[in-house]
Length: 275
Ligand code: GRG
Image (cartoon, rainbow, N blue to C red):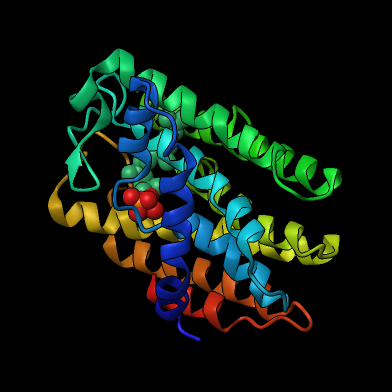
């Protein structure tokens, strides 16, 4: 199956889960969170969790969807905070005003705080064995917190002077973008009860997918001449070498999942082709 077909199949269920989550809550904070969460994202991270779960031969059901969407809460939080004036200062996100532009900076900080915290509550409440829930919570905290995404964002925004080489840049983006993709890919494996060896392969797949995704984003940005103050892949090594680097990471990603025994990897390989 192509990734696009997989996405068409599961996107409505993902979006349903997300839009129903706070449907019976009517305070302002829930309305503002819903504004940020229900905007038109690609839902790539929940889809990745579902795709690795299905690739291991499992049938996706309601509780898999509920588990898979938790990472989207964290992703939505990261975008809300990333758009703040003191961070990337963006007024538009997902075809609408960014959350701070719509509701003010203070409210946008609270929306992000609420989304991040709720992700862990959502996983805690899943009808799954405690050991699986704990593993998901630990891995998501590791990906989103100061070990990875928060640290990557700090480097990206405030430590550009330390970025000298392609390795420095990859390190930042592995933390900033790759960690959540890595979580998303391995979460499907954790839900499927895969062995540590197989989870390691999914880790490599997710991390390299994340870096490739970021290089692609940098190549797109340079065409639009955005974020000139930042060291991006094309600014550091040029467009041609960035393209080669992108292909290299896609190859590492593909090889990692091709080596997993009994793994139905067509959707996951097709996602790499789309990047
Ligand atoms: C605020 C701690 C903190 C971290 C923010 C992920 C992130 C860190 C910032 C996003 C900045 C950015 C635009 C990075 C480029 C790659 C990227 C993650 C794009 C957005 O993800 P998509 O394309 O977005 O999956 P949608 O809207 O489809 O969900």
